[in-house]
Image (tube, rainbow, N blue to C red; front, top):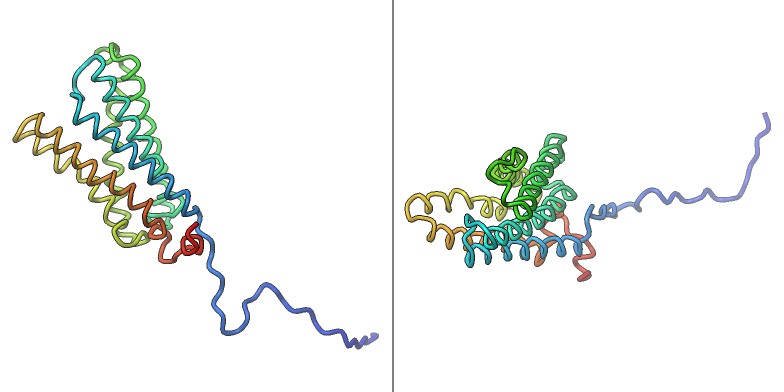
Length: 228
């Protein structure tokens, strides 16, 4: 067997970090600017729904009812943005169960949004429409799903600071508003409900705009540090 001796130095490997240096941080799955835009959408959609609750009777028919339905749809579209951030950052944890939970909530919210749109376009079908009657169930189911996700988010500890807890604050809407309705009536519950939306989901959206790095599972993105 021939032996070949060469004076050419071995090529340096580029797939390892130099000794004593930390490995490069993985880029976040979603850009901070995207988190800010989706947070702004959540805040705007919530504001539209809250204002409609202040100004119009959500249980009324006619124009007021349609405005309430469309305003509720604006809020639901904002929730899709929140779910997108939660899915991309794995806010509820890295397990398959957590991923499936978010996908199920997207389906529930889509069906609830379909009710809002159809009820605004075809309010006369609300009384005897089987499809609308079935879709109506998904409004409370979608909110229940958001509550479960907010609890999972707290337990997962991937989102940090106020963003870890604020989804749970936002999802206390029913716990606060329903007793007020039972004790003080519809007029008081409208003001409390609309106000809670501003304190809960609108504030959550603004937190995403202000501090998107808190969604990045314990590490701050270089893009946030550069102000991008």
